[in-house]
Amino acid sequence: MNILDKTMNRRTFMAAAGALAAGIAFGPQRVLGAGPAPIRKPIPSTGELLPAIGMGTSRTFDAWGQPETTRQLTEVLRVFFDNGGTLIDSSPMYGNAEAVVGDLVKRIGKKGDYFAATKVWTDGRQAGIEQMEQSMERMGVEVMDLMQIHNLRDWRTHLPVLRQWKQEGKIRYVGITTSHGRFHSALERIMADEPLDFVQFSYNIEDRTAEERLLPLAADRGIATLINRPYQRGSLFYRVKDTPLPEWSAGFDCESWGQFFLKFILSHPAVTCVIPATSKVDHMKDNMGAGFGRLPDPDMREKMARYFQTL
Image (cartoon, rainbow, N blue to C red):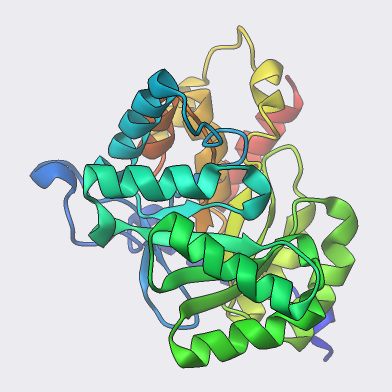
């Protein structure tokens, strides 16, 4: 059978999702020495456990030279780390975000908890090498945990370089990304043909296209998934405005609509890590709260989706 024709059957999905809901993906660590353990999921290529809530930086960390914003982002980052977060995803496309992240991580002294992820976003081999070297300097790392090819740009040129850098120990994991549905077919072909550690794409309770092909293929190929746009650029909150959270959401330890949306994503067994972006401390606290407690099982996920569709 061609790998593009494979799908995750319900029995496999039920078993994996049931394990997550039961807490098997939880690690033994305790946040701040007292709280419950955060949900962690394995990176398939190595088995390394990764906290299920990461952080994106698009539109939020491009704030160089703004003292008040810098203070606010410092606290955002502190809340992220204090609640078990490690993976921070950035890109040269995001203005000064890489440099701001690197500076603030150094400033608060959390380097040991820092899983640095960024992207190459240019054309040409040498230009890509120079950009990646600059990104590593900006983010304050000698070894980049995850280097991704941004939106498939010149991927045939960059992918051999990323593989070489991985062999040389300059990067730990290789990935490729898209945030546009029109690139899904091309990404699917790359996932089927090329060995990858990570892929990144959009997926949320409103846009479930990735469930059809990309998530099952990632599971079949043993590729970790980073999920961007979990709130559909904020539009999901407009759908639920003035609507109370359903009482039954307490059954999977959900305290807000933000956690409702994130836990829906996290409960898919092929999802490794979700990377919401925010520059607000209270939003970061809420985001991180989704990375604790129980997750919905497959039947509850469908109930969540049906309820959202009625709004």
